[in-house]
Amino acid sequence: MKWLLTLVAIVLLNSAARAGDAPKKLPNIVWITCEDMGPHLGPYGDKYATTPNLDKFAQRSLRYLTVWSNAPVCAPARTTLISGMYASSTGSEHMRSMTQLPDSMRLFVAYLRLRGYYCTNRVKEDYNLEKKGPVWHDSSNKAHYKNRMPGQPFFAVFNFTVTHESQIRKRPHKLVHDPAKVRIPAYHPDTPEVRHDWAQYYDNITTMDKEVGAILRELEESGLAQDTIVIFFSDHGSGMPRNKRWLYDCGLHVPLLIHFPERWRDLAPKDYAAGGTTPRLVSFVDFGPSMISLSGQRPPEHMQGEAFLGPHAAAPRKYLHGFRGRMDERIDLARSVRDERYVYIRNYMPHKAQGQYLNYMFQTPTTRVWKELFDLGKLNEAQSFFWKTRPPEELYDLENDRDEIHNLAASPKHQEILRRLRGAHSDHVFQIRDLGFLPEDELHARSAGSNPYDMGHDDRKYPLKRIFETTDLASMLQPEDLPKLQKALSDEDSAVRYWAALGIIMRGKDAVVSSRKALLKALADSAPSVRIAAAEALGKYGSDQDASKAVAALAELVSFKKNGLYVAVQALNALGKLGPRAAPALPAIQAAPQGTDAVTPRQREYVPRLVEKLIADLEK
Image (tube, rainbow, N blue to C red):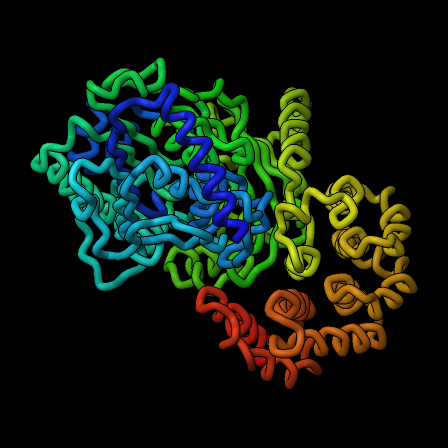
């Protein structure tokens, strides 16, 4: 009923808008998208790439130089794209999760439908938000604009998967691009396996380029090209390890080519020129509002993105923002910001190595050989960085350091830049009410009966200022802040207590020993996330007696059936940090996957993956 009332209100508002300033005819819009691909294309100056169709398309399009996907992995990136809102503000930032928007908000395609558009998607969705009300007319492998009513404007998505991470490791594969000529980034070791993977990635780009050419030819042959705005981009950076899933520019930077036919040139940005470039900063959160603007509507106020196309285009952005939460079965929290030149990364869990074991990522040959060489001590500093714990802050100069390996966060010459980007990040946290500072189980528990977005804007349920201050205190690793963290372990808010316990873990054995009494008390905390953090601290750094209590506490929480997916994932991650001390929990670990069929297929593998890795490590 709420959706129906909202729909009526939107229809009335847009009817009024159409009567005023909407165009009599609407442009068609086609998105041609691919997966897991950075700007490794001929139009972006990559001479190793073979992309004749995109080279030709770029000659009649505007090429955007700085576009971020906001998230460096598909589901949260696509969620931001389809909603026009940062997934970190809607509780949907974690890889393969599911939350809801408030009843008054809709995915941007719904607003196009209200203007009469026929909306199709072929074929990937992968959203972390439930679809409410009408979205796509057709979302399937048969979806096509040709199925619309005669004369009906259309918004059509064609998505190509051949560049996906899974296709880089597909064997057998006869290479077309010469692996001896591929550029190896400074963070990867130069081995035959790495060269093969990079060359195969470029082979896949060439295959995708042919598919793009087929869509463009079909538009021309159907006589629709002069009425269709065509937009090409990918869903995040390349699928190679340390690109996909990470908040470096190489994980977030995507190509964006936009062509406006002559009759719709009035909807193009002011700096539009066929074959030209623009330095304007754009990110996925801006795409939805821009499509709504192209349809003649003003983007709804709740959308956090800013239109960069059409009559309602906003002023250019100063910063782009990236976010990283749980990646498949591994828990993390990091944020990034970039301007025209610099990238700033804030690691809120610096005690975790970047290269946490991810089952899916370790299927790529590059990942395995890279880790093997690290374990053998055969990597240089830049190549080893990925497998070590991280600094709280990273700062990179993209103009002079394209591979982002020289961290300038401690450079005296760059402190003003560091402070400016750090401030842009913290301002953004409060502007969007970033929900990433809640453990995932609490995100859902606190949203019960409502939704994460509304919960996040209720300071009684989500006291962001206090939680953020504790998170910052915990993760900056200043030794003198330990007494404040010990005090925070008795705070009334469980998220504050959670971050206090994590901050103690981050400071190592001496901090845990000096906090023993408070941590033992926390083993009985009402919040599972606090119990888990305290147990990890005592299990890793406490006495044998304390570790035994900690392992017993974690063993109680690993059951998916009893405790739910998010608690089980947290507990299993904690046990994985304890080494042989986790052995007494082995029977509980083996039984943990029971009941996982109750979750969505997207999440079903996470507990079994963690269990498999834990058992393998304990049996070594």
